[in-house]
Image 1 (cartoon, rainbow, N blue to C red):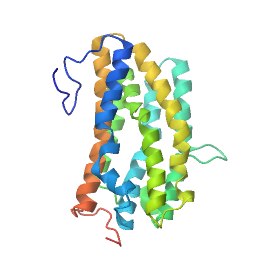
Image 2 (image 1 turned 45 degrees about the horizontal axis):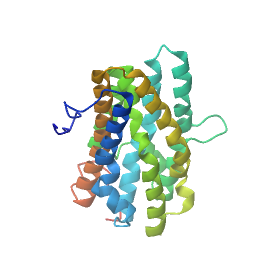
Image 3 (image 1 turned 120 degrees about the vertical axis):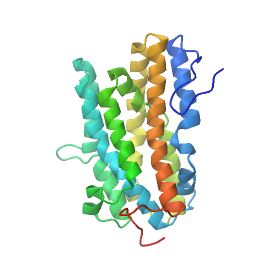
Length: 254
């Protein structure tokens, strides 16, 4: 069998049915999801100092705060009202609503709890260039590719709950500057992510009707794993190996 490349599933991958598609998607997650990245092993294992954790939370905020923009673009791709109705709760999950906080506010509780100024975090002035490039590429992907691929790119949510559980337990155990009150974002996603992932999985299985369409679905998921992976590559290079680019956040504690 031809090997999977950095950007696409193997050309001879078996994708003759919806079940074949699901098996291939789960194989992609098992080998390419960013829970496997060395930076996450350091983060969850208590091997980072506070400044390095601050850098991770600061950069990740740009991704979190861009998710509603991405989801608004996804909604704009669909004439089908039922799909728009199903998808729009994702925006509320992150933006919140009148009288209720969303994921962005919960993430700011984390960055604030780590000692970062909210105005600085929200400005995104201190993030790594690679963070901005990767996240913006994700928004462009869902705008420019097919609606099927736009939905497929969200399927990393299939693998998120295990990562969130590992993050909650690992960070609470290993860091005395982390407390349960700043980890509410991850606790809430334990409920939201499976709901979102199940809809997206059912959608692509029902609507990717040919091997070519199933291959496009797989490649969209690979693209998304790359978006997540490269952000951690940048964090590792800057804050573990010490190559912080000019103008990016420099922790007070190194």
